[in-house]
Length: 75
Image (cartoon, rainbow, N blue to C red; front, side, top):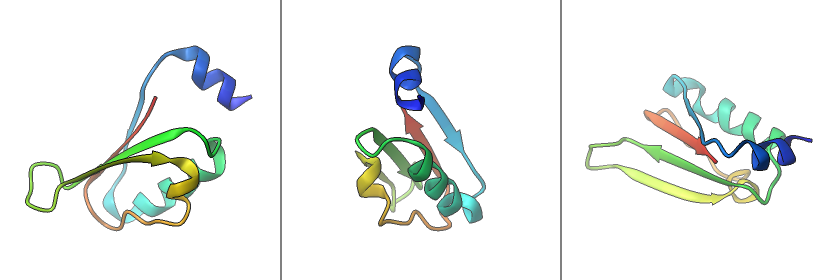
């Protein structure tokens, strides 16, 4: 079970993807990871439009990241 494996590993997983594939990666994460888990997405780091958002996978399901440089953090 993926939820149990995540919990037992104790590791933080970090993904980067090319900006045009961000939304596909987010969709894949939302389909694979249980909805109660938290995911942080950091976009446009070191710019005036920087955003760092942490919320549950279930809340990410209705959102998009768009074509912005982003880092996805699960752990």
